[in-house]
Length: 118
Image (cartoon, rainbow, N blue to C red):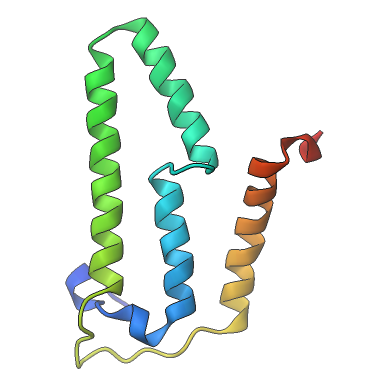
């Protein structure tokens, strides 16, 4: 689309539904939903910050909430609204889905079977 303005790229779910599914998986992973690897990292950071100083739990909770809210906002803005008339978009190709799969499958295997990395 050659733009970074979120309001100009709306309604992509109707044009490229499979890419919207990949975008949803990326947003959910960014929000550290289980069983993503981000959840483990955030839990370790939260526990270590809480043992360091009690006030940091408020700051960590606030930044986690802001991150989740922004991820949902980006997904809903770009995928679920009505498509504008000026947007010309080509359909996604197999190479893009292969690229997303080759990034997501090893991460999924790392999450579900960590002993494979040894």
